[in-house]
Length: 129
Image 1 (tube, rainbow, N blue to C red):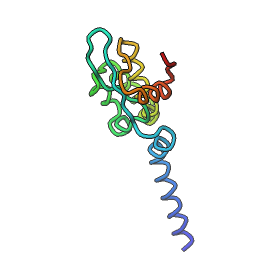
Image 2: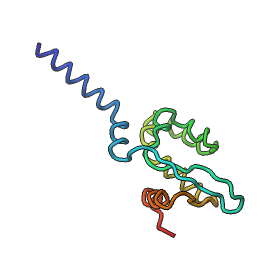
Image 3: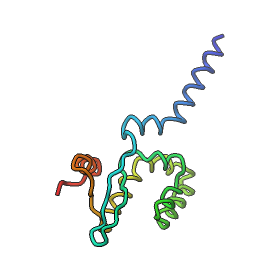
């Protein structure tokens, strides 16, 4: 019986290690949230995101492809291969913030409800304008 309980605890430990990125992402970063952005010169609107990137945890480097960032996707694929996949477990914490920051530096501006803009500015580390 004692060996069964040891195996039981070992299985729980392995499961905790496997699911630790999801657990930490939920506890620390919270859910992925979106904020509307408007391009300054064209007036187009787009969703920017902040918080833990659940799609990146599930689909990895394909997320930048779906968001139209082919060069970033190629870089993420390369880094995932070089680090033997460890990069894929780190990026969900960083990707949404980096994606939205790239949009903001490319001429997009926050254009949502004031409370959403304030929360996004706080979570992205942007000073209020």
